[in-house]
Length: 123
Image (cartoon, rainbow, N blue to C red):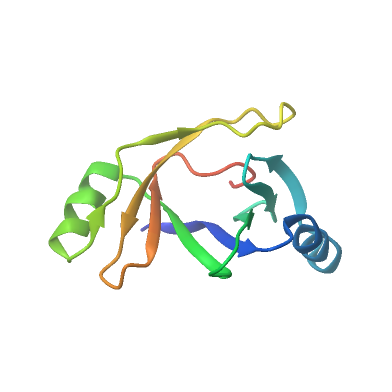
């Protein structure tokens, strides 16, 4: 079964939003990227991304056991891949985990990330 391991929020002020989630829920900062700040509760990675225009939930990330099989099924169900595997390495040297994700569209054009290795700060 796939597991939700990543949620990305778009906000005008990532620093303020990150501080809010850290203070209120005790989330830990696990990385910094060129577009935002990555937090985690140890199970799910929450990306707080700089945005303008459309704010709120930007995309969801699912960790799966069989990436290729999932992509085949995605296409059969009306979704489509936006990209090939994208390698991502957080710029925070204290947490050098590298991972990959494939950007996809669901049938309603919601952006979905699919990964076989997960995201920084997740189990």
